[in-house]
Length: 446
Ligand SMILES: Cc1ncc(COP(=O)(O)O)c(C=O)c1O
Image 1 (tube, rainbow, N blue to C red):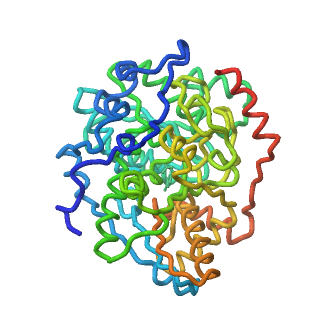
Image 2 (tube, rainbow, N blue to C red):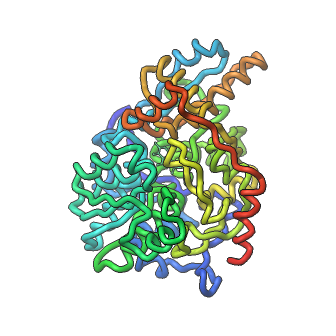
Image 3 (cartoon, rainbow, N blue to C red):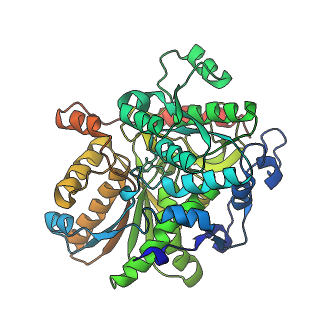
């Protein structure tokens, strides 16, 4: 694959869905949000994409493609080492998004969001970040398009992954540990829970609040919303062509799951064949057992953030005030799933599995030793799910073509690996009672 093979349009799966995702609602009026309602917070370019339910293909601006050329197309790799290690009849492929300059898929949307913000004369942007991958990507993109960026980084990751903070600062971003005393949302949660180590939901509230109070400033989000999923489809569109070049078609496509962006990116172009041609293909989202919104959450309207600043989003959720355990896959510690994914799951067009932290590190270590790439703790959830599928193929004595997305490398996550090797990592269980208690509060919203 060459530069010319980088897609020229993103794929908007909503246009092909029979059951469209339910609309986002204004929390005050409970009426559907209109495109203009999003303008104070988001740039118009992404607001349009967010609400587009009719165009299956949306052209990628030339300036964005120019940036993509720095690292795209990304490699599609047959994991022969892993196949051999597992002694499986399955063929395992992975799309390697870790080769981007910042080490993850997040740059695919960061570049697009920075471009649209710049295009309408915005000077400042804000965002949140979990493990720091999205923040690092947006810092790079903000620099590329000459924007000032403030990042609220979840406190536990700020401490666990100090070098991601350094990466953001290297690109010129301002990084604040969340919850912080710099916003009303942060002050409230710190007053109620002084030792709270933060969550993506809280960091989103802080970033939204700052954007609303700063002139000429827009908010950007690294996952969950439809336009972010859209930008990530370059992953699956390239993979579709590359699988064709390899003379194979996947039986199953797997992505790890935080808010859904890399999962959507790798799977939607393949799901398109299921939606439009009835092709038989399974797609699987792999989430942490400690934050199981897809496997144990409830499908209903909820806020995208902790303080309740965002519109109400139809989502599989654990409740916007769910406080996930401090697992190392910081990018997967989010209470809900985007509205498209939630509808696809409700309609049984996709599956979800949950994985324990220790299983993800075991899978990551196997993968690193077999393939020579150290995966991010988030991506390791997809690897663990792929290994399960390959082991099942072996049990059944059947060939199976498995494709997963390697969303990022783990070279800045070595402290987590150290803890794993010294036996200091553990699994976290969420009890049914905790899930039910958290969801009880949601009944008050709608
Ligand atoms: C490497 C990596 N993979 C996956 C994710 C999860 O996000 P999403 O579900 O939006 O792909 C993150 C989030 O920070 C990440 O850093």
